Length: 106
Image 1 (cartoon, rainbow, N blue to C red):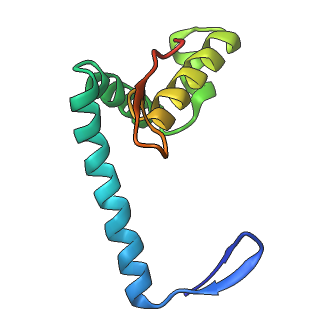
Image 2: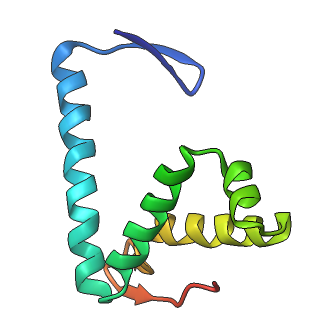
């Protein structure tokens, strides 16, 4: 399989493709474990974000029309969801090994 990454064409063998697949699956399951260890509510927030995404099938404007919220409120929700998902439930690991927990600004 030929993919382009950072402007370079890279050939991925079947072994590399399987490695990527299993690494992604592992990361998905580990993120839920991390969320459970960080805070009890983070798993529920994660499930809520995923359910909202599935309910609108990724069409966020349809969601805004359906629940009658403003574009600003939708943007605030999406920013909060993005911060939460990027931080895996407010969990950070720095290179020096310290764990830092920061509250979401939602």
